[in-house]
Amino acid sequence: MALNAYRIQGFRGGIADDPYAGVRQAFRFGYGLNIRGEENTLKCNQALKVDAGNAVIVDLILFFVPASNGQLYGFGDTGKIYRKATPTSAWELVYTDANGKIMGAAEYTNNNGSGSYVPYLYWMTETKVSRILLSKADLNNWAADVEHNWQTLNGDPSWHTAVEALGVLLICDAQNLAMVDYEGAFNLEALDVPKGHRHKALLSQDQLVLIGSHKGDKVEQGWLWTWDKIQPSWIQRRMVAEKGVNAMLQGEFLTIQAGIKGSLYFWDTATLMRIKKFPGTYGWVNPGAVVNYGGLPLYGLNGSEKCGVYSYGRLNKNDPYALNLEYVPSHGKFSNVEIGALTVYGDLLHLSWKDGASFGVDIIDESNKAEARYEGLVWDGGESFTQKGFRYIKLVTKPLPANCSIEVFYKVNQEATWQKATMHDGAELFDKVGQTKAIFTIETGGNENNPNEGEEYELAMNLHPSGNNTPEVVSVTTYFEPLGIL
Figure 1 (cartoon, rainbow, N blue to C red):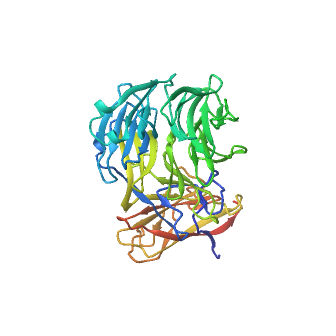
Figure 2: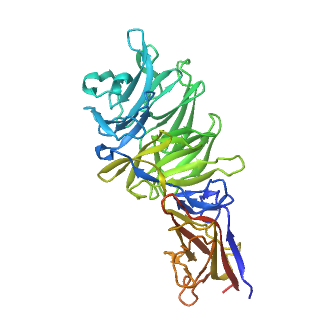
Figure 3: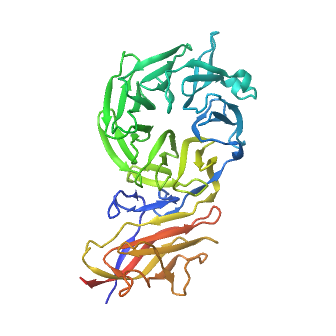
C-alpha cells in the first residue's frame, strides 16, 4: 500500500492555545527556538548566561533602571541596590535601604531646590520615597549621598511602580498616585480612586497615563484607568474580570497582562479583548518584567510550570502574531522559579531571577546558542476515527554544522511519554556533518498489540547546537498508511 505523508514545514505560528489547532504553522509547545529568522526554518535561539559579578546579587531584583549616565541599576526585594557601570562591567552592591523591599524605581529630572534641573534616581519602599542625585550615584559614597526617607507615602506592602509620564514622576501608592513634579514638589495624593483599589502597573501613553490596579487576591476584578493630570479625577475606567492588572507594554499595540492564569489582553482605551494565554495552568508577569527587545515585546512569566521569557508579536506585517518561549534562564528550570525584571542595556537583554535561595542576573550570550525543543500539535489528518500506521520520519535540514545534532520523538494517541525514533543504523541522533536529510523509523508506540498504530500522532524534536552554530530544520515529514476504523 502506498504511504501517505504528514508534513510540517514553516514554524512562524508559535505556541498554540489548543493542542489540536492554532494559527497556520503553530505548534503545541517549544522553547529556545528562533522562529522569526529571515527564512522560515526552525533553529536555536541565543542562550542566556550568568552576568559578570553575579555573586554579589543576594535578592530578587524587581526593577532595573538603565540611567542616562550610562549605568544600569537594579533594585532588590530586600532593599539591596546594585550597579553595573558599563555593559561589560561586573555587578556591584552599592547600597542597602534599611526599609527593606524596594517596590518601585525610576529616573526623573527635576529642580534640586537651587534652580538647577538635574536627574535623580528615585526608589520606593513600603512607606518611604528615597533618592540620590544621579551625578553622585555613579560614585561610591551612597551612604552619605542618599536622601533617605525623602518623602512619606500612605503605604502599600506590595508595589509602588513608578514611571515618568505627563512630564512628572508618578508613583503607585495603594488607591493613590503620588507625584513628583518638575520643580521637585511632592504631592502625596495627585490622583485618588475609590478605596479598595491598589495600583500596580503604570504606562505613559501620549497625553495619558494608563493605570492598572487590583482589589486583592480574592477578588476577580482588575481595573484599568486613564488620567491626563489636568482633570481632577480619573477620565475613564474599565473592569477586567481577572485578579488584577499586573503589567502593561506598548509594542505594535498595547498589551495588558492580567490575572494569575496567564491572560494577555489587547486594550486601546476603548476595546478590551483577551488575545492569548501563556502556557500552563497559572502564570503572571511582574510590572517590571516587560520590555521591547529586537522589535518584539517580551514578558517574564512567573507562577507557571513553564516559566521563562516569552515574546508575543511579529517582525513582519505578513507574519502572524506568535507566542514563543524565547529564553529559559541560565539555571535551566521552568517551575518553582521567579523572574523579577527585564531590561535592555548595552543592546542586550538582561533579566533577574530567583531559584530557591539563589539569585542572579542573566544576559544574552552572543557566543552560544541555546538547547531547543519543538513539540508539534496533535494531528489526526482530519479523521480522528481512522486508524493509521506510522512508519517513517524524514528530516530535511540545512547542511548540518559540526558537533550539532537533532533528536526526533513521537507519540501515538497522546501517550504519557515520548518515544524516540531511530535511524536505520540504530543511531538516535542525526549528527552527520554537512548532510541535509535523515530517515528515522518508528518501531514502538500505540498499544502493545499494534505498535506504532493509532488515530492521533505528535512529533517532537530536540535541537542540539554547538557554540554559535545551530541545526536548521527545513521540514519534517511523517509517512503513514490508513488502516481503517479498527
